[in-house]
Length: 143
Image (cartoon, rainbow, N blue to C red; front, side):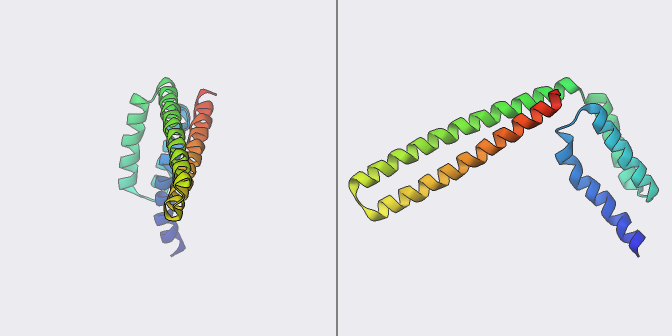
């Protein structure tokens, strides 16, 4: 029973972990990871998984370039910077609306503007964290 459960869980765990891992590593590491997964699938007799992994290995060997990974990492940083800049503009606009609401003196309008500002600030923090992550990924790819 334990072997059956393990045989079912290991391929699933490898599948789930692989996409997050795949964007942040060089081609050699990707190839070794796929080869390890093929070995595990062979050990458990998972022929469908073996076939899929062999296709993935062939595609990785044919199309993966470390330059391509670096270019993708640069694009992610650029996109993340653009997102942060937009979020900063949104925060400034929300601050302006809050000032206007306070000048009007209407409590309901002030509360709504405060909630909106808090939401925009939260989004800015998220986008900033995404940017830091993208920069760290780029640094890892470029070594």
